[in-house]
Structures are given as C-alpha cells and as structure tokens.
Image 1 (cartoon, rainbow, N blue to C red):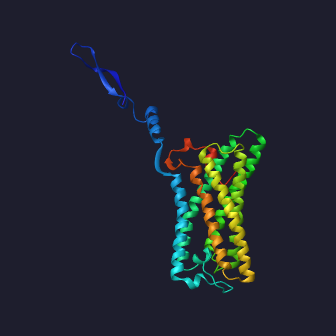
Image 2: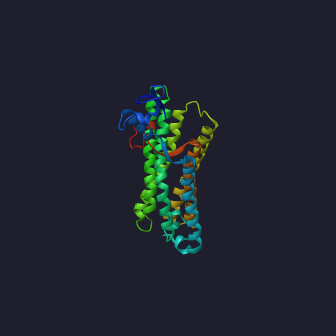
Image 3: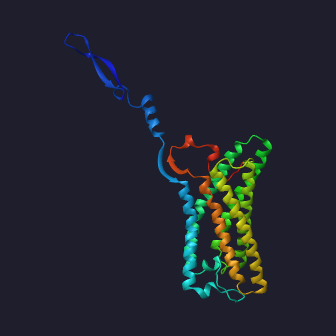
Length: 306
C-alpha cells in the first residue's frame, strides 16, 4: 500500500522542529472517499473464472453419449428381448432390429431418452457457436455479393440445425409404438433437415472459402464433411428403397436392410457433427464473473441471425 509523509504539528522532535511521520494512503484517506471507491470497484470488476472446459471435450461427450447408449440398447435388447424388437407388421424373417425398435422397449427407452436429454443441451450450444463462427468468417469477406449470399446461407444453416435437433428430440420422445403416424412424420422431418443442413454447410463453406481451405485442419474437416454427406445420401436411398420393399412387398430381410441403412445414416450424421472437433480444436467453454467487457454483440447467444 502506498505511504505518504505528513507533518505532525502536535509533536516535536528533540530540537523543537515539527516531527515527520509516515502513514499509509488508507490511513490518510477517510472512508467513503473517491479513491477508496475506485480501488474497490477495480477489484470487483476483476475477471473471475468459475468453470473452463475444453470445447473439444464437450463435442466428444456429445458424440459418445448417444453412440454408447445406442450400443448398450442394441446389445441388451438383442439378448434379452429378441421377440419384441424383431416383430414387424409383415411378420417376416428379420435379424437386425431398427433403432426405433431397440429404443422403444423398456427399460432401454428410458436410458435412450435420458441420453438424448443430456445430448440436446450441448447440441444447441454448438449450433450457437457455429452461427457466430461463420458470421465472423463472413465479416472477413470483401465482396458485397458474396457477403449477402453467405449471410442468407448462414440463416438457412442455423435454422436447419435447430430443426434437426428439435426433430431428434421429437423422434426420441414420440415412440413408434405409442404414436406411429406422428413418429414417422417426425423421423422424415429429421432426415430431411439433417441432409439439407449438411448440404447447406458445404455450400456455405464453398462461399466462405472460394479458394479452398487455408489450413490442413480446415481441409481435413471439409473432406470428412463431404465423405459423411455422401455416405448419408447413399444410405438414405437404400433406407427408402428397403422400407418400400418391406412396407408394400413384405420381402424377407427387407426390414433388416432398412435397419442397417438406418444405423449407417445415424453414424454418418454423428460423424458429420463430430467434425466440430476439427473446427474448434483449441477453444474453451468459459463461465466467468465480470465478463461483460469481453462480450461482443456478435458472440452472444441469440435466436436472431441478423
């Protein structure tokens, strides 16, 4: 603490001169003064970090949670409830149950619903992060036409992502055994929004990187995105084909092939979203006090895209 010299008029030295004495700044300034307030204010505005988590770890958790739960549901249902999960409306021979079948029996349905409930929260956060990330890349563009086109694509990407996440939630909690017509419609919405989101992302990246990726990490991310999108398209075509064969022709094993394509679609979807780890390899998720001065308008969580 800073000290200052003061002359004490009431005490004298041995030679009769006024005595110098040292006091601290806190002693010399009365409580409630402006300097004391400024000091306490500076201390209260100090950045205090309560939690910091690697964004990569959040993405890994978001991927492994449904993937691990799906594996547990598949094994447990296949071993202990084979008759329930292999039953179809055609009653034909079937060896591979669908995702809806293994997550629609009890107790697997409760495990799957808890898993998706924990999975949905980080997915919404990742959607917000991507929106702000792409907005920052758009701000670096020089061509006004490219900026306008990229901004429009960003809005489409953002809302398709939110629709996909919401449809995943709906198809999880609306069981095919409880309400099959609605479950089927929500599943179609999930598939449509998922594939449209992948395509819109690739279009947006092409607009943001007209000369191609700038780094090896960006190149790997784009390559994986294209591969998972192609795999999703191919498996979706197979899924539709075998579903029609099963529904209208009741071919043996048609539903098993449909289920296999469904697992591939789910894996490709998870893989596509897993490229988040390549897009944000060193970022951190931060919860801190007094972070207002570090917060930017374009970095805040918001449902708006303009």
